[in-house]
Length: 185
Length: 45
Image (tube, each protein chain N blue to C red):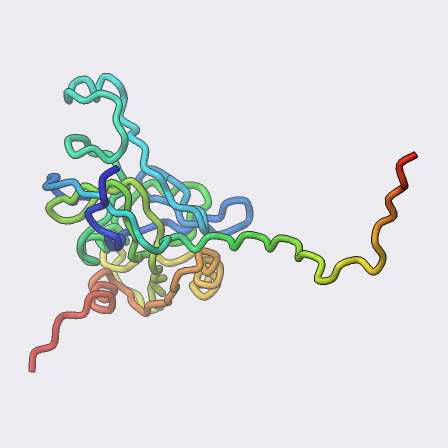
């Protein structure tokens, strides 16, 4: 048995959809629709088809594999993840809002140029953008939540990690709040 | 999410579980005292 390289989870940034599922608000991956349940880690699974794996010279493997693209993704900077706050995805049924947060990554982790792909993950903190009331052009403005953000934050307390409302109308405002620039004396 | 090319692989085994799991239900408490009267055991016949 080999000793692990690290004993603290890697912390990255990611974005989740908030969706109503069976009458409860849950986090859901915007890209693949994976539901993140409270008090249960998400475990990565390689979804690549066999022909695609064979073409890449890969066989069946545990996710993440360094030469594949599988694993649970997280960005190294809030700004990278925040671009997904405004990026358009087909709105899946039940989607009410999109939130950003820090995510703990552990197990096998593939470090990439600007983030990570991991075998296991769970939210470490969740920030719920208020999206403001002032009118801004839609490509700039964050999507408006379909239910009050206070209600979303209260429901996400099920995850038993810090949940915070952030008052921001644009991606840039969100990033400034989450990753403030170092102040210079 | 665009995170660039893979650079290296490592393993993480957190000392503390990052998942705030349900607390296990408490086992029923053992009786604090012995019964007042000893159980009656029949004499062998």
